[in-house]
Length: 452
Image 1 (cartoon, one colour):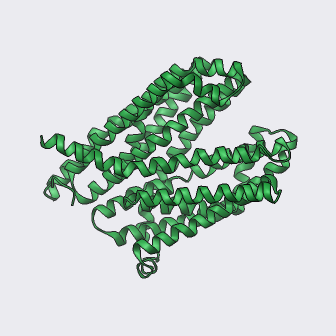
Image 2 (tube, helix red, strand yellow; image 1 turned 120 degrees about the vertical axis):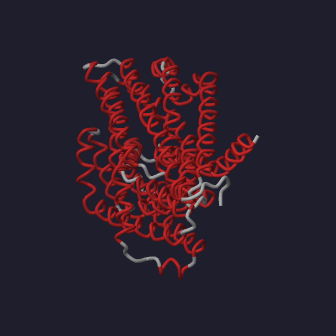
Image 3 (cartoon, one colour; image 1 turned 90 degrees about the vertical axis):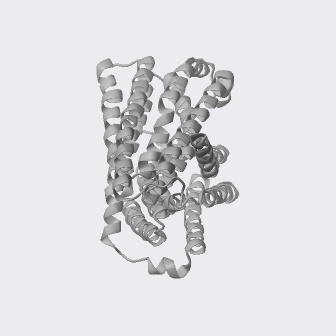
């Protein structure tokens, strides 16, 4: 009875942490749809192409530095579990310092990073000028965008998920209003969308700082705003492997899109729909992953093995239930969803034919999101980095080397093998992590059965 009651309590706590983050994550695709709708009503069609291509490039570029959110969450959650609020605040200050430094580098040198990618894409000549303008303007928002990553990580680490929701929704609503006003109202076209996004990022940063002052107090913020090498090293130690892991993950997804494009336009479009569906599923599953980061990190900080163990079961259970519901939705409404995403019969037929593969890949991947959250909370980021590179090297690039000239079926098989390896390799590290944590708690501090 004690185990059932503890699991029920942990599940309720997990859900309370996760649902605001699920809604906040859902705002991201809605913003993309709004931008596409606004750009689709501009003076010429090449503005839509410039906005969609440019937005995808920045999703990859800024996504490379998402460790500023993930690493901050794990370390702050552990500080929060120890009751060390000042330590978590010091970590945030150093994460902001890192974000500003990286952001300024991107402002001045980011075009050198984006130019090779643009050359690989080789856009049509009429897209060149608006795309270049869009990229140049969006780079100006890099410091604000990366600082928002750090502030969001601090809020999530403290368990303030509702405030994270307010921050995400506020930024996206302002972004949509500004994009429409500048692009259509002032007839600035794709430049208006770029400026609207940059302005909303800086306004979002101001909004996040206001919440920081409200939660902590202006005096404590300035008192902890000083350089400490220990906190900076902690962030570097945790974030370095996370960045390398993200590069491996991006390489797999980019490789899937590029390989499909080499086969044909219909196949590339079908893979595009597959990636949209997978990203949509990830937004929900990431909510439970974030909750797992909070629970694992705070339990570790509290030296509370019972809370850690119960939160593991709760996170896995909610993840599996969500994945099962998504599988059911795809089984019943999959064809209708695909038809809503495209009007081309050949693409509909190809994408619908791949729905079974999508279901298998989703089931293979779902627990990897939960595991990522657990290992981020424990700040065992080297495990995440090594297992991701092994899965990418063996499961994706290894299979492509084996196939040499893969068909679309073989691409999906390679991606499925990657998904299975990503989950199983990281999952295999979990029992060892649990044993080490249990032994450390037993040796140095008596275990407690309830959260402090």
